[in-house]
Image (cartoon, rainbow, N blue to C red; front, side):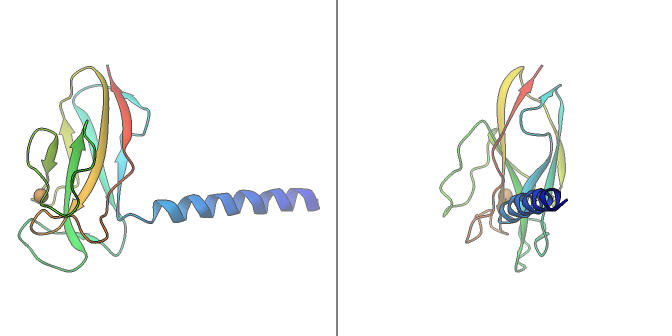
Length: 135
Ligand SMILES: [Cu+2]
């Protein structure tokens, strides 16, 4: 019985560690899941932790910003405004999900939160970079 309790305690500690590291960034990808095989268009859902909030581009409020979806690229220079092109999509209207058309094959997705002027916060808030395969 004691052994079972110890194992349960160990599992709980692991769970807490995972939660703590996930909570370090304000943003995360709710969908798709890392490693998923999906069909295009892909529904991508953006997650945001409290106390952060979404605000449209141009609206300057502390601890708010809008989502940027990075497709098949590395994180950009985090001290500059985020580029706006086919690999760096801005959701300046405050959107929290999108339908993304992707070519068949492997792709990576990463969220980068940006402030009213499209500049990453300090410290920067970005999700884990996930890999997906489009059928
Ligand atoms: Cu932006």
